[in-house]
Image 1 (spheres, each protein chain N blue to C red):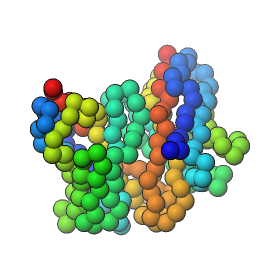
Image 2 (cartoon, rainbow over the protein chains, first blue to last red):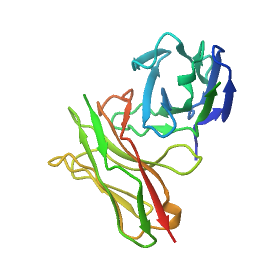
Image 3 (cartoon, chains in turn green, red):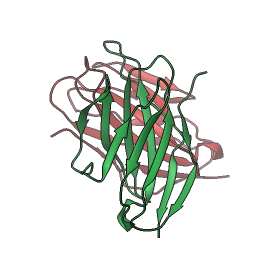
Image 4 (cartoon, each protein chain N blue to C red):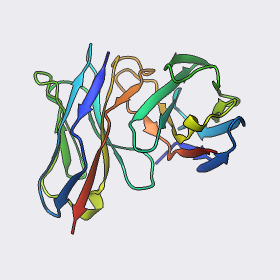
Length: 115
Length: 115
């Protein structure tokens, strides 16, 4: 069964450093998402992306965050200057573009630790 | 705005006990409703979903019925197993006919099953 993959599974970085989290969505999906989950808290929406542009973003997704689909398969989340509070599990998700089909398939996540 | 409220955890049960995890939602329009499960150390997996009122989603012995009149989507299982120990998230997706819609998650309920 096709699945969403994410790399790396774990990342440790120093405060102020840039990080890029990578995702490979399911191949026939056209809508892509990033979510995050701070340890012990609920999963929060960050951003959705379609047709090479952001569809919607949350207030968490400030100027320090950016997303990109650099080629036909990868979908990346960049944090320009990490803060301690960016430490979280980051999930990528994708959806097939079909009316009524709203199941989002999630990747296994990247655990980011900012020191 | 749209939101999901689910019962606080943790919930601890003995093996073969009956499980109910309550979930209610607030939404405009016609959301699709989901239960996601997160096993220890893993990502989010879709457990079941329902896309319209009175639909019943089911998977792996779990069931939930979309109740529009009570705005609820309670998760039930007749006989739980130790392997069901996980965190369960109730969620909704608004804008049924837009695949760019984000998922809104509840806070999660941790379930522990004793042998």
